[in-house]
Image (cartoon, rainbow over all chains, first blue to last red; front, side, top):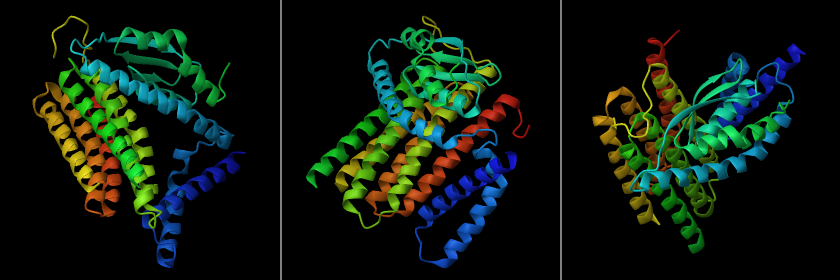
Length: 169
Length: 109
Length: 88
């Protein structure tokens, strides 16, 4: 299984790098650019395929599809976050009350933790400070009480990310 | 074509509004962590909106160059991944080295 | 439409100068780094707009490179401040 996982990761990295090369060079008909692209993307994929696709994470296509469906909700949350920040910036009295909160999640995978941390940073009023991958502990800086409560009590975002990465337990 | 121009102008106006709000927040907020709240969010969406508006403009005005919008899409994708990560990293460095968060009622730094 | 691009570019430059105040004055090194990072992100949008204003698609490649350099610069700075060393 290990060997097959490595080949799969190499293939995915190679395809992504080659597509990126074609989009940047814009010369599909010239054979020199194609051959140089094949050589350099094979080199990059050979050297660093374990950065993009870890060997143990199977079902990566299904997870990518679920992540793709998660993105529109995330974009809407980003728009809400920006309107919230604009309100707090432009209000004459600046209604802010910063605090640092901690909570734990059941997520363990690297990619899931990264997605959750970036989503927390982009959604209303909260920024991730530290993430502990071993026990899933997050420290979050919140700009006011309401976003902190939304993250601590309601926990919509944790449920959504756990559903994307199938790590509900 | 007029409708496309109006939509592109709306996107550009929204993006510039959020970029300006990010700058004003960087000036007005009382300490480092709250300043990062303003910049990390507003810059991400502002830059993304501006580049997306230009992508729509490109699709309708320069449609015989179909590969250029892919670069702009990659740029939006990269900004939306890299900007929160950079914000989080700088904030973590500040928190580990002992910069105290501002509490309500203290003097601004 | 070209004039709208020009106005947008001028407004972005104005917001860059607003951020530059925090980069020059701001107490401590962290405020300055936050300001520099913000200026980098705004410069990406400015480069893309100027690419359409001068009708040169080469500016988009420069914007992509600038985004990558900005990101790596922030990461290296944070690592250096946190550990006192870049490679550790």
